[in-house]
Structure formats: C-alpha cells, structure tokens
Length: 157
Image 1 (cartoon, helix red, strand yellow):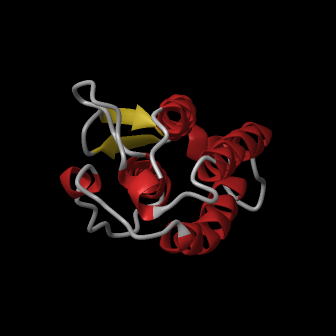
Image 2 (spheres, one colour):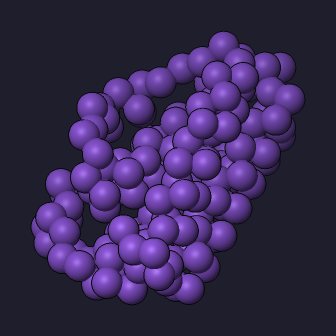
C-alpha cells in the first residue's frame, strides 16, 4: 500500500461501503423467520444469506485477494447460513466496515494496476477486484430489496 492513495479507490470505497450499508438496512427489524425466508423460486436466497455472502465476498476480495491476508472462507457454507437475529450480522459489519475502508482508502494507483491471482477469476488487476466487489454488492443489494418486498407481500411473521 502507498502513502499516495488513489482517488479511484476512494470512489470505489464509497460505493462498496454504501451499498453494504443499504443492504443491511433490508434486514432491519426482521424476525428470525423473516431473515431466513426465501422466495419459492429455484436458486433464491434469504436476506440472511445475501448479507452473509456479500460481506464474505467483499472481505475475501479486498482483504485476502487484494492485500494478501490469509482466508478461511467457505463460500458454499454461506448459502446454507441461517440466523436468529440481525444482531450478529450488524456486529460483524461494525468490525469489517472499518477494515475495508482502511484497506481500500490506502490503495495507490500502482496497487490498482498490479496483477493479482484471484482464486476464481485468474489473473486480474486490483482495479478489477474493486469493480467485481462493487458490481457484486450492487447486484445483491437489488436481490435483497426484491426479496424483502416479496417477504412483506407474503406476510411472513
């Protein structure tokens, strides 16, 4: 990391963090049954899963792949996750958010252009990683909004 942070990285930081903040708003005030409910269509996920997966994806890509911290991520387990309240997810975000912010904010233009081997995407740049995370976060925020709308329409308590 550099002492000359990139303005591009600062923009990505804003969009990644604000998307995750908004994603977490979709679970506000929900019961355990509501958190774990998912639409009946194939391959849909609960709000709980969407939040767990989105945070794990951001952490893996930014903290592990981009800057080289060791990872113990179990991506498949994320899609089986269930929870009794939003509290544990909100608590995890309170510790993860500042780590992501500090990491992204410290990236230089050189860091963004550096080639990195991604565990599923092959060799890509640091900028590609930020694009992947921002796109992924926005995609799952959209899923979460729709899932919450369907949940409320289904009148799940």
